[in-house]
Length: 87
Image (cartoon, rainbow, N blue to C red; front, side, top):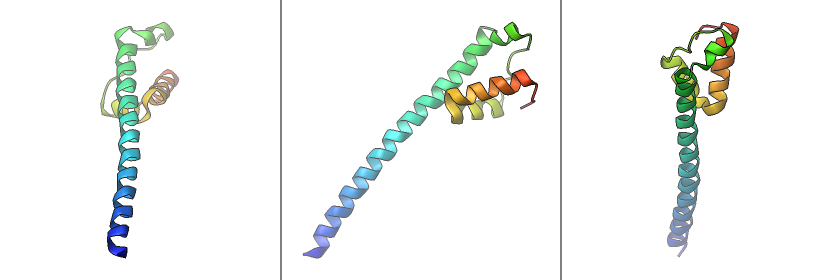
């Protein structure tokens, strides 16, 4: 009697945890894609030229920071580039 009830409770708990995990992963993926698109658009429209700086180099470090941080990551990359910190 206790075995089937425990199995049902565990199945529901796993289903709820998977739902929240997949929901959060979806938000993270959207954030990462938006960050990379914004980084690309900054270089496309030469926005760094307004500050007298060259374009932000798109390499593995800047892409990882932009993907992991999203829009905040792009802002960090831009600020570091404006301050002259090499990435």
